[in-house]
Length: 254
Image (cartoon, rainbow, N blue to C red; front, side, top):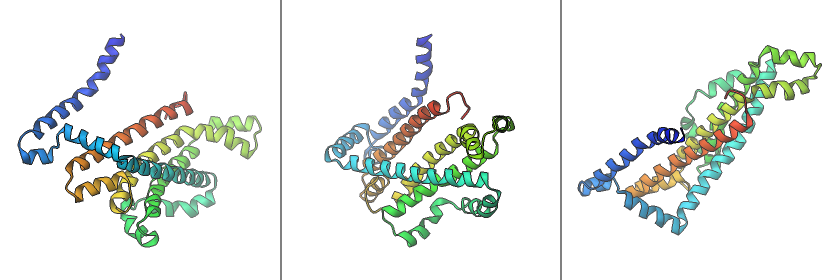
């Protein structure tokens, strides 16, 4: 049974391994192909060189720190705003139309405006990430609190809980799966926004800036390495968050 499970999971590795073999084969089909399809050994050498110089650690640390900081700020503000909109009809009527209008504007379309307001430094990049995390956190929090089942609310009335007790002991636990889903979306959008901001606001370190620098200098190995690292970091953060989410909302559907 255990062997069957291992074999079943191993099937997911077949396509990536086939692509790596095809990539390595393509890299050996002449000089032009070697430039486009950089060999795996060349990418390995580039990885070791960047690790030894400390440049790669700087890029990784900067992008990860920016993403997590923006996620923390944006998700916190989003949960607070979503709670206010769900609990107050007046706030929902006042804030709701503006929020739903602004979130339809593509985030990267706001970058020229943000650049004029706060420049093209770290503040602008962080603000892009904050906005990316803010939108899904607001939406999922407000929807989760609005759609708490009536039977849960009735429990609060039966136990004669006050408004604050009902909110923290009934509404928030019931809405938690939706809120966690919103944070999961916010994490994905934050990482994408961080990369987009670093590409467009190219000053300073970051994986996006590393990718852009490789393009400008014609170092295809650095470009491809940056793309691989961006994908691996996104996958790792998503897997880690899913593990934490399962512990946080154990027994509930997320």
